[in-house]
Length: 147
Image (cartoon, rainbow, N blue to C red; front, side, top):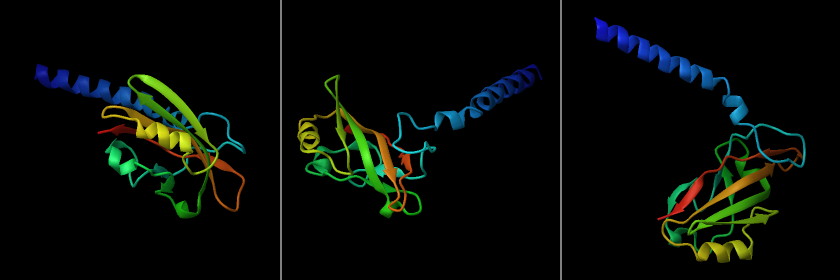
């Protein structure tokens, strides 16, 4: 009986903690940085590079690839990526590069070629818009690790 009461109290405490953080979920989803138009929440789409949204990626899978796509929301194929930042972590050193399109710059491609197993890269501050609008939104992204 004593164990049952202790387990019930522990479960109630855990649920209260989850509930306390759940109220901040909308604040955590707000885009960072300054958009070029009115600020919107992070869109429903996610960034796709070489057919993946993040995680472990083989060097041969991204060698020479230069384009980014958005998937996972209505109209994703028509969405235009207007800018993004590529953050590369190689041997503990971070390099940040910028592009004002949906394509990697030649410098980005060159930097990605030098990565080794365990290094990582992440597309950040990816801003996109629909063709018939000037309003932008930030796209969800995840980190890639060379494996």
